[in-house]
Image (cartoon, rainbow, N blue to C red; front, top):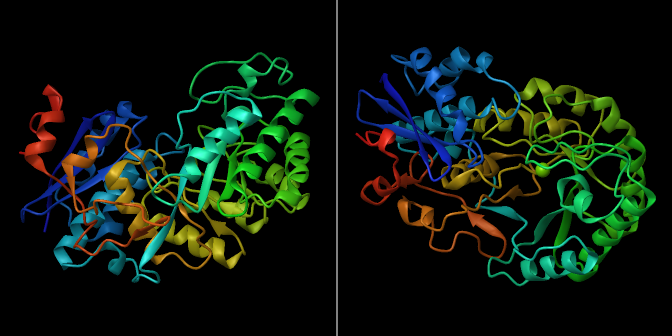
Length: 395
Ligand SMILES: [Mg+2]
């Protein structure tokens, strides 16, 4: 079998990759819906993979993996990897998880980030938000909520930190917290924990942008509250480096689990974090780290170091959801849960087949059993959402 074409369409706001072959099989991969600008980068890889056998996934990846980088520039490589596994699974007539070593669980635990539209940055607003999450049909057993520099707090709380609050979605704020800012963060965290009780685990996305002493103070202040983890306090998101030694100072200073990794590209960039015991939980995103198999390597190496896995994925879309499910089916027992992708546009659920009507039940997603990723476009429905320049995407 040979790859005959690589296409990319921005559907809604999500770049979707489609790889075609000379045997009529095709595969899909998806990029975070915050990154429509990545489309030209996807197409850049086209000439590097044409003519190759898509079922030799690793051989194809060797051609393009070097030409990627930390978030957002690992996403195109990652989505191509997903699409190759989709084809390889279809060609073998088995679900992707079988090609990754076989599943060790029949359903995978999903956690919910956000999940409420209640605004506000006061403790009572935060508590109201998680009460709404707790009442959701899906029965999530873990939720993650934003505080500190990951939230509106630097703008909503006067004198939150020693710096000028900046706007923008790339997490530009960084600096030492004032006493008021730190206490406000702790008050919001505890208000959420009290609202959830011990029935739903609570993780906090905190940064990036916190300084080491504040990170230690926040983690220690919450020790008796049994949070799932504190995420990305020092670096994360669009930070193109890791700073393992700083994370190690924080992690060694507290019993609260410390988490990072969503921005990281490739297994090599987890080596320091793991070997230095710099974190307790790693959260790479299969749509940024280099793909599904890359995650398996990272999860196994984390497990050897006593480090847990909680993959990032909130805006990876429905093909991304399928990728998470296959990947989590095969991860070792250091897996906590994956961050469940939820499409911002409801119509996405009408243009993709292969997912159950109710995707998350009692906080879990059943492992998908159809060949490949197990999801596909319903072409006649999906065509309605193609831009003019992508009109030939399904041809
Ligand atoms: Mg995060």
